[in-house]
Image 1 (tube, rainbow, N blue to C red):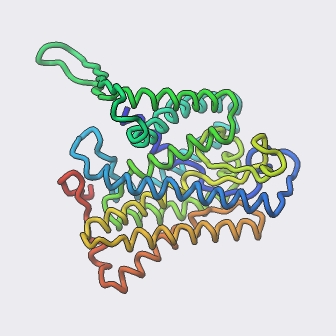
Image 2 (image 1 turned 60 degrees about the horizontal axis):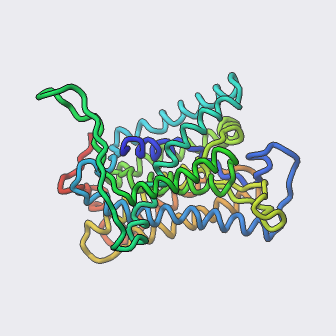
Image 3 (image 1 turned 135 degrees about the horizontal axis):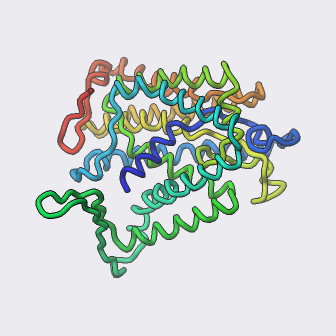
Length: 366
């Protein structure tokens, strides 16, 4: 189960990063839609708010996750080698999808993707809801423990393949998530899409850990180039964004005030623009915790920098009426603000040399 959750988190990092202002072009490819100022403001404001939720709560949960002493709950650590290779892997994945959509029927590809993301989405949403459900259920709730165990071989050669422990509360979360999943499969409704998207983003920020700030700079720098090239240099990313029917982006209708929940002209934000800066912001929160100064200076500065960068993206997008690579604005802001603060505080060297301690063990670069 944990490996599937990580697969969901990893899939998010391959998400399309172009932020688009006109859902008619991005999703429907129909006639031009001119949004009202009120509808535009509501859509942009909602996207920003939804983007901040998984970053903030995912960062908090990443601290708890990093302190876990259970090997099964250990986060996946991104090293400098992984960070350097990722833009190349992401580019190959993106271009491969582009070729698939050009060669094969879009309908059948999206059917397979829907089933794939249905499974991942149900698991991710269930994992996201689990801590909340633990607080909602009363102490008197009959919470039974279960264990799912698959082994291979027998006797001394017996080997565990899957050993997953869960309880009744987890089953309730899985049931609720499955209902959302069926709703998404049948209706492809934008609310169901966003529930899965938020779960993917939060799991990505929580479970994908950078081992130090240098690795974070390598990853963000590489994806900065990746994002700019594929949005401005080619039509690949925008083409795939129009064709790809999966909850890898947050959407919000600009015609909600006119059509209600049946609105269909969306502004969108790729989950990559949330998760990629989000894992760096979560890293800075863990760095704040490691300093033992009861201060969250670097976390809050990077969080505010993200708001500034996303706001700048929306402003440029709205001004020039063109899809924007949000990382073009987010990466300099999220990296630059904390680095300047560290420079003034005299902690720049410590920031780049610090390696976080996870479950009592140092994470060193490969």
